[in-house]
Image (tube, rainbow, N blue to C red; front, top):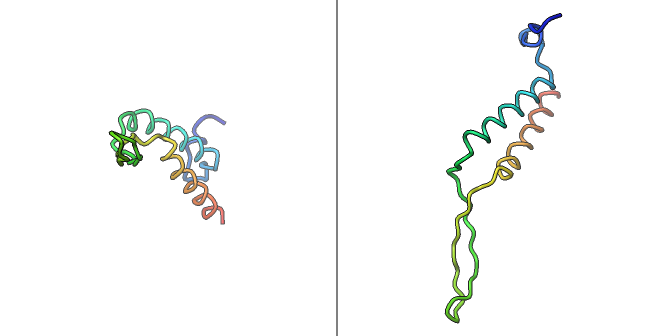
Length: 85
């Protein structure tokens, strides 16, 4: 059989398993190399008691990979549902 039928996507060699493996591999590479130092921040406002006054302070926190995963995973599932339909 060999390894070459695995890469023969023009003959229907790319099934759901290949797509999932490629997506996971690409996602891990993306998260490890590109999102190591994220450029995007989440803005949080907090009420802080300071000098007998209530003051609103704004803190910026780096966005975690779970925020990206929450946006990416549903789109993958919707894409699979539409593609299989």
